[in-house]
Length: 249
Image (tube, rainbow, N blue to C red; front, side, top):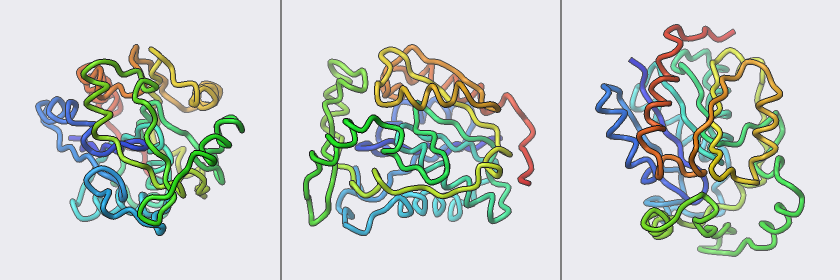
């Protein structure tokens, strides 16, 4: 049975999947939610040494030490960078632990791109200028959670949990072999109500490329918070749609 590894986006942590975890587990699946180094309950580890590679290692080590197999790797937002890099490294090693990649309203990089590469120059400039120093580390402060389509109690719940994001991961490029990645089934879930403007280029990119399963959710960017049942249904359906894993080339 597929095992799920859920990777959160910027300013978030494993906590953001709290409403989805029991739904996937009640369906009989082994599920792990990762908190990346430097945020949420690992915010005390914030340091200038945190780079994109650090976050790749966070996920790789979880898969290794939990001895996971038949993994559905789910990345939200920024974590599209992370799951892309993790998948490439596992395939390079000849590993067959991955079953599928699911990008939840996430960054889908091309080789050599960074998280910032797909954003308009004015957005990049604003984020560079707005970066501040915390614990001797340059960080991006959390935005108003309204941009994620959150209101009321959900807005308050997310706001009090978000933490600054290590800035270096915003501009770190990711090198990988797209031909290796193409051996894995890939699904992109677009959150459309409201759609996050900074992901418009990514949505257009995925729609123009081949070999993607494209899905939509009538939810804001933090669909795991506002629509956990629908998201769990989609994840379960996507994970079991293709029972045969693709053998890495």
